[in-house]
Image (cartoon, rainbow, N blue to C red):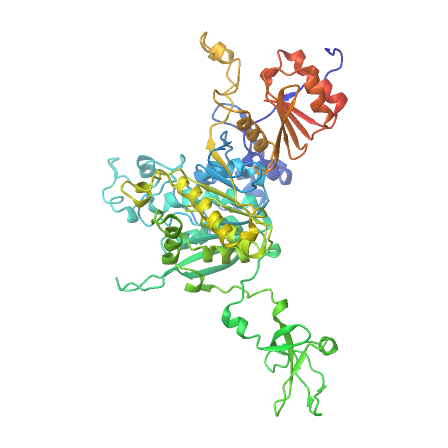
Length: 625
């Protein structure tokens, strides 16, 4: 049946990632509408923009051109800032063969450049991540893999930094030594800056990020983190002793690394505590029938006490203070039998601090070898693979302790976008097995080629991501053997995805750009070889839906239909869809429904689609792709 008269036109779904730059411009425009202007983009189209000269005038009483100010800058910084705001057309395609328990798992493993991946995740995970841990390249002087397109060539760098002589030739000697070259720190900063900006967007307001680094870039890392997160949001800087032996090389031995900890909002940060050490547990050397083991807490303190009142001891001695607690609080402790009295000449009360009530130890800023070492980490990987297939992994014990303080809630979501050997996933699974938690992870790493003649190559691995996924599989098997009670109750799987180009062809071409040969190719806007699941996940990401949501595949009149999260989205990508199928989907009243544009022969058919949903499910968002 075809409808005429009043009709509903179904719109095309915009498949680009979140446009952060436009959002920021709109926010500034709300505060200062006078600074809004327009500028042409690379295609000549006018876009909203900010007149920064006007904005500076609004934010300062007297602006003096060229006035000196405190700032941290480097060559390429403007490009790095702009890169964080650029949307991406790339997407994530599910890799069922590499996944483990794809249908049920809520863990995510992504292969691809993490800059693009972070952009892809902006819509679906904005403000949803509890904790981020990253172990980025330390910039030790060797080439690193993440070479972003906005970084400058040697020629461009020479122009930007005025590294040419009066004849226009590049000055000799400035780039011979890689560590002393002008580009050495700039490239690293250009790599890190946009990634940290995008990572901050993903954190919850109570979330924290941990970043491992060594002496090569620790000062620069702190400077950009102060700028991106705000220096008031630093939580702590942990010095970690990475080695259990001290090399006798050079004039001083470097045995530590740093872990910078920043919060999204320091006032709201959810920061946990570390498990008590064996020596700390020994402090609980007293015991009573009320609650078991306890340690003593000081109540009477001449240097820190602020409260003065009289207390009579059992022998009649009068204590005047100063007390650490108010008189009312002391009476409450006494009433609940939570005061321990010493006997003898030094008769005085102490509070009882019970072991069962302990939330752990407040983390300090120096972590020794009891938190794990690089040597231990290498042995952990070797014990799983029987060969040392990965260089410089982090120890699981270090990661577990970071999880204890950064993700104290046992249902936290953890992100690691420099995943390396997948230590973070191993630690998440181990911690869940120990405390019954339900923490989930999102990991991202490159499909970087392993070195020729390496142990990894000899073991049959071609890329780093292969090692990462295999480490998760082997670690999961080991944990289940050691904790058989977790089998069937804990999530030991993961959904694997690969970063790729959009599933859809470029369809914004002008009519004169089509040739006779390309007209037939333009019938379908979907690329060859792309599956229904490819389309479904790109649509989910576009609509801000999480990659871990459950998906049920059903049949309606022999047509495949995908139901995401019990009606949050229903999708059908059949080449031809009858009115009966459309109506049955509409009667489910999903929040969103999506179909292929080519499933409908003409505009009238799409209008009919809109009318059916208007009748059966008026609140459903309906789109075609």
